Amino acid sequence: RKEVEQDPGPFNVPEGATVAFNCTYSNSASQSFFWYRQDCRKEPKLLMSVYSSGNEDGRFTAQLNRASQYISLLIRDSKLSDSATYLCVVNKTYYQLIWGAGTKLIIKP
Amino acid sequence: IAGITQAPTSQILAAGRRMTLRCTQDMRHNAMYWYRQDLGLGLRLIHYSNTAGTTGKGEVPDGYSVSRANTDDFPLTLASAVPSQTSVYFCASSGGGGDTDTQYFGPGTRLTVL
Image (cartoon, rainbow over all chains, first blue to last red; front, side):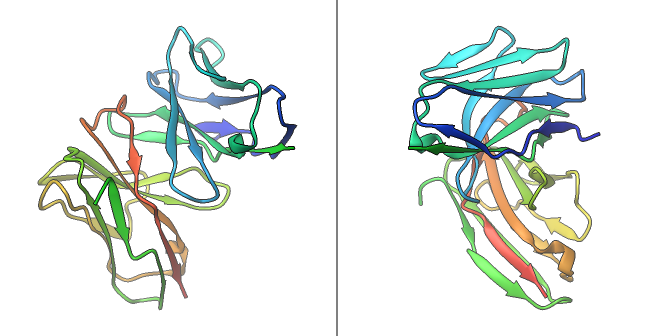
């Protein structure tokens, strides 16, 4: 089993729709969780950190479920510019992050 | 310079050759990292440095070496390249180096080993 697993997609979603995807992780001791965004094999960029209480940033909402060991990302009112690959990231040690392979999202007009 | 730069942008290399990928940051970040990204896999940590003068091994360090002579530069060397090292290499940095810090990435180096 991979340490961080994501559905590779692609998720094909019409503009304006709501889309959600999950990421599961295997290390129950993990404490830090993130969603990064990567466009077309360019460099990853932080989208948001994921806190225990859940957090929201505009149209994006992230949730953490420690009991089931998954984090989720919800995108509301999706825009064409949201098309990207979303990378789930979980810490393994203080200096090492484990990266999921990513979920590809395609927003269609 | 603003952020992190990497050089070269891309490179085709014959197997057995030595290659150094360069990474420079101007954000005065303490920690720097080298990752490789392969299709279908997440980014995998090769080596890291939590401050100038120190380095550590990541998940896939074999065949690679790094040095951190100063805060800004973190070169990655392939002593004798092999085809399995064909990948996209990303350098990253973060302020404190802890696992809660945002990592900022360079644009990547696309390396093909033939």
